[in-house]
Image (cartoon, rainbow, N blue to C red; front, side):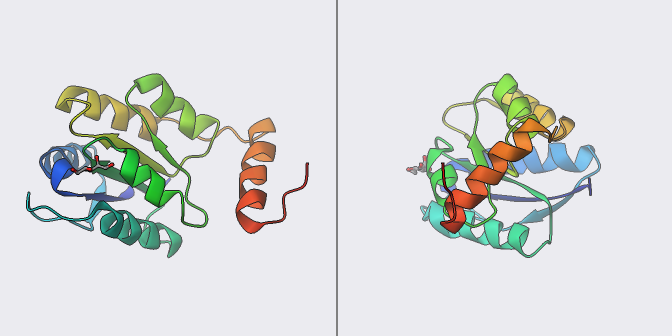
Length: 152
Ligand code: RB5
């Protein structure tokens, strides 16, 4: 997969965003940063929306969103067509959400995880590949629900 990634945060995730960006660059990723650019209070939906637009436009295949908990970011991201955002604070989920759910956005909270765990979450997410097969049927159901065409 293309080594390009979008990253975004609100004020509560700003410090960790800087560190995760450095980590990604050390891994050889080109990082597109959609803000925020300071610890001044701001609204997380703006940055989640900016990031999702970039993925929808094909500017990068994957994204990382950081706020205080990661939850607000994931709620907003999952309102966007084609976006499957997973809020994770353990490495098993961060890996499996790529393999089983084909998640394209990883969310976590600076007030929840430390820098070391954040790096491990990123490594597990990016190091895993979507498995397809029976999982494709289930991901297809998510798409159908999103499109209003789902039937049991
Ligand atoms: C900001 O105080 C906080 O609400 C936000 O970063 C996030 O945790 C929301 O889900």
